[in-house]
Length: 450
Image 1 (cartoon, helix red, strand yellow):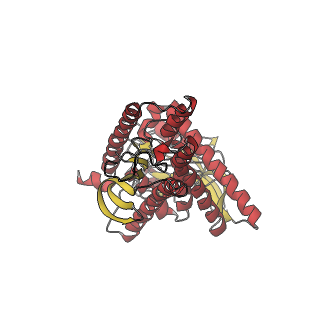
Image 2 (cartoon, rainbow, N blue to C red; image 1 turned 60 degrees about the horizontal axis):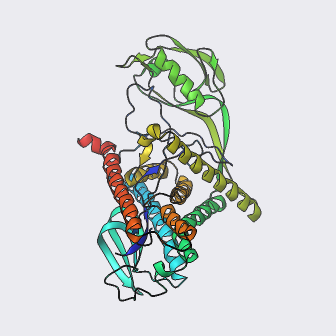
Image 3 (cartoon, one colour; image 1 turned 135 degrees about the vertical axis):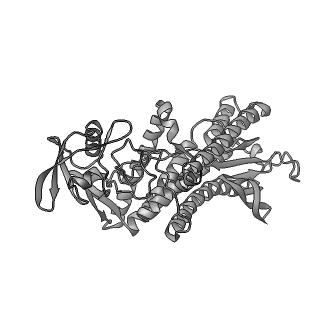
């Protein structure tokens, strides 16, 4: 068996993180699936040293790199028109980001081994059947069929290898520290890559800074809806609902309006509206959904505006980058904690490669600049998740190394390690395939065909 260190894109949580430097407005979204009729029709833009180790890549829906700019819910997987150039281009951009992150992670393992003189036999992007490959310096580089991640292979237990089993440059024969460096290098590579992405964003396009204003913005009013019938117009700002003043910016004001509308089907709802320089009241009678809740047919978003700030000096650039990097990292850790503490509620938010690319494509369509923090957040997710001491993760392999160190250099029986890791790999593959199927079926154009 060829030993391998790998990264897997099996499960991910899409998160909505607050930027420590900037808070971003929720942007009206036009690419979401049709909202359920129970809503008010409002939306936001949204390795084992003896076996094979695949590292699941988590990403959490809910916190997102652009502060509050996007809020992705479980239904926020867009339907793509692949005949549309813009859609196809955004999908390719998101897929390229994902592929780059896999390559960076595996390159970390590869370089850590190569620079220490450790034998490496394979470098693969994807799993399963080989689609394309070439050989260089006794290493097979390949592109494989299933886009669940990638791996770096070592010939330690490869029966076809002509390297002696006691060769000191086989990974399994190296000291504990050398092996720990190789196993953890993928995580380090992703962390460094995330920092460099943010630094590049800071220098090239700057970081958005949000300024919140009172009320809730109405970007869109659907024709023939209750809102349209009773005089609400796109661009209006709702300041009060039934006498309740709405807070500045943020999603709370939107939630308050939604709650009031849902609870008052076929009853008057009084909205204080700002239009231009004038404030006045509009009385709206929400239509009734099939479940008895109210709807008025509008799209809502926090009333915020943003500008971009660029550093005035290199020290400023490092300062901005450090704060943004730390903020994103903290949000990933917090999201991970919430995922495990409330797994029954958050399990449905776990996403696979299809959903990740869908969300990335949505970001690219809405704002190409958003790809910077989308990529940074994915890197941080991959890095932090892979440190967990679970089978099929880098952290699981590091746990075996620590156990070996605690036992005075005595390894666990090979069959025990392989059994644990193989079980983890099996779970990763099955969960990954399940998520791919589920997320694919959630795409609008697939739903339309079914």
